Image (tube, rainbow, N blue to C red; front, side, top):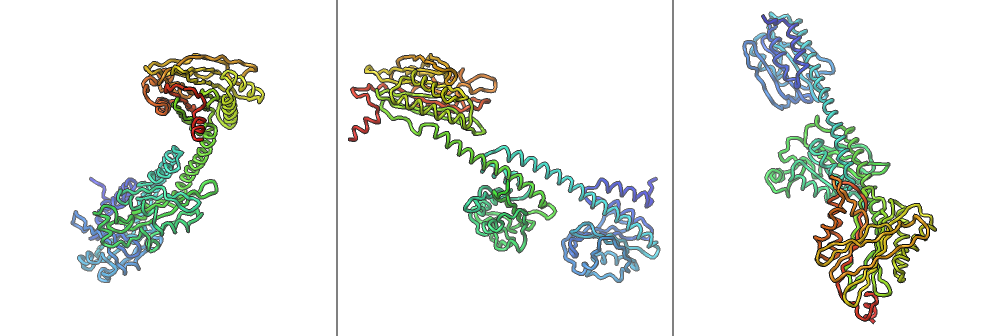
Length: 617
């Protein structure tokens, strides 16, 4: 036998309330026990938004298994006087005295002649209130009925409060997870525009339906990225971000204001987000190709548009702003605290990217000044070079190269690598390259040039060593060229013959800057027409794949496959192949390539640039 007393029913109600995800799920556990109370013929509940908007009404009559449910959004102005304060209010009213204008329950209650309406009104949250009432006849113990109503309302209020609290905790957990993911995503890129695009993509649709991001430049806000759940509206947002004067004025007014501002309703009048789109706009938004779409315009959207603008501030300076566009109920709008946290994280990521960009430009500019701006142009040699920065932190590398013409008509190629990175390495790079260049331009032989550079490094008491190789290329009357190579601990050059074979120029010598009075021996060999000499730093050969093998092991094969190509293609191809091959290692890669065309030198062996000058005279 089921225990159907009120106390057991109330116990079941509390159990149901602890599991419920919606207050409406309690209806059966509330209505049936109240209807079983002696003298009760009807149970009816209402839910109101604001003082006078009736959202729904639910009624269950004695002897019926099916409730009457009226879903509506009807305005009942006279019902505003019924709105309760903070505490529930229980009232007894004769049904005959109910006014339809303020009591939508009256029509149902009148079906029980002579009944009394006992109703408890109570507040659920700041957005609205509710009522739970019963129609009773003269046999009812009204005081007992009032007590049961009050107890049922206590359970309903507690259930609603618990649902809100659990929702807040879930939302807080989701917000924390989103912020953590946002930080990981934004911090994984050091490119400014990519970081800004990630800010927008992360926020939609988790935070808002649309987002626009602007970077603050000296001349004002610069649009960088926009996204929207609708591709059609994304295009419109991009146009707004670039050209809309209303938004530009808003961002300018915001200035350095750190608080997030929310705008809606009349505050959006005159903006592209206003909810006053005409029918044609609505039609375009639903069926058009996107040209007439207005992000946030009413145009069939269920909820009014709200926008928020958050200033992106990092390290005491404003770096930009992020504008969110919402078409969702108020309860699902993010809090100002969440938006501030997201804006702070975004700003730091953006500022880090900006600082990295400034540093990258500075380092690359310095690196360019440590390398020749151009190589000699001659009919006898096809010259080219390639340089790839490998350090993600962008310290200045120590790799260098150069090619110089010599008084006897030959060309000298030089390439080197200073140990380490940074300012000291850059200083030694400049010293080494310019010392060798000056000596070789004066006609000094490669061995003597390296010895004198070594002496200069020892006199300067340089704390770092360096490697280098110098090769002179002297044309001969028979169409060949004489290679004279001298190395100071540097990887040996390779020669790609016209028949596709690859050989190594065997030479060796002590590192520069280690010992005093070091001499260097030269190695000579001949090359023929279309033979190519390749000089490189160890960043090329020591590029390592995931399995541990070095690019050095396949370099001859890769070079042989480039037979017949010009120097520029060979240099660029080898650099990119090594970069793609590399799973570990971050050393810079420098290559200097010279292809001998086989053009005889003729009677005049002056350098080609001088020949051009003489001809011009």
